[in-house]
Length: 150
Image (cartoon, rainbow, N blue to C red; front, side, top):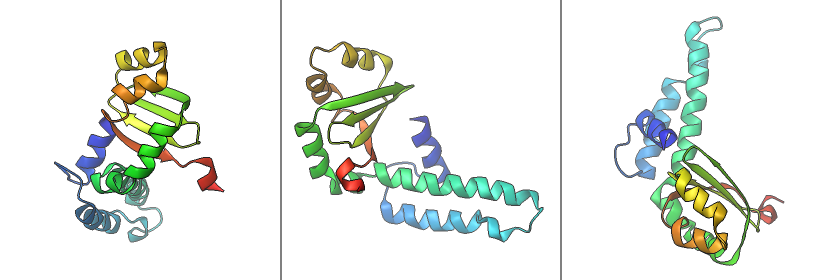
């Protein structure tokens, strides 16, 4: 959640993410922080390089969690969560990363340690995740399925 808030602050987004508005803000920030604006040796060049990377990373991240993106990929997501099992999972802080048997990986934001422990200890992890994780938490696809990468 901290990462989401940092990127929203960078792009001055207070509510829902509008992709058209996000793209305009992205272009403005890229122009503002482009390292080619600064001469070699200028201390601002290094800061601009770091900020430029953060702007690009933030843009891609926010696009991936935007409602429009989720709606466009909803059918694929529904197939994954209904037809695939859980191959692996990792939890760090409030981020739960689940890798499915089709090779795709999704990140779920705001999953606390209590919910994670219940997932780990569940008799049927897939059933638990369907009931309490998949459609409860904000998510994004972080890695594509193996057959899509080829």
